Length: 141
Picture (cartoon, rainbow, N blue to C red):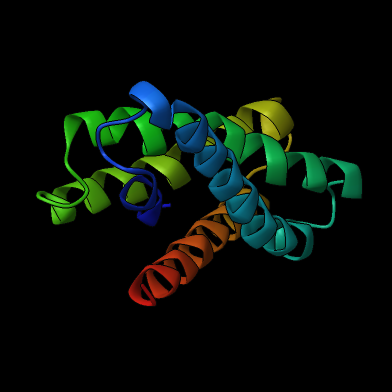
């Protein structure tokens, strides 16, 4: 989610702050999973087993989170270039997660059309929810 680098800090871990940096990073990853997983559990198409939905909630975020939280902030300042950062992060995460999900669960093209669109819609909705909640939490202080 876009709010994560601002909460963690753009420069990343240095000196005595390394432990705090990684703690915050993991805590915010956990928060993102807590927000997104219930949406995926309910909104992914019924053909996916519950265990796959739960796995997707944890795994998809684990795959894109390092890019959004560590790589992109080193390229685009979430504070100074907020619009550019948000565009990059909030486009990258759902597109990458849709592609990863498709490869992991839909690749033998036996499913197409509405089912794939539903699954991608669920992933996009989960990302939008974590974005929205993150923006709200950031506005609180």
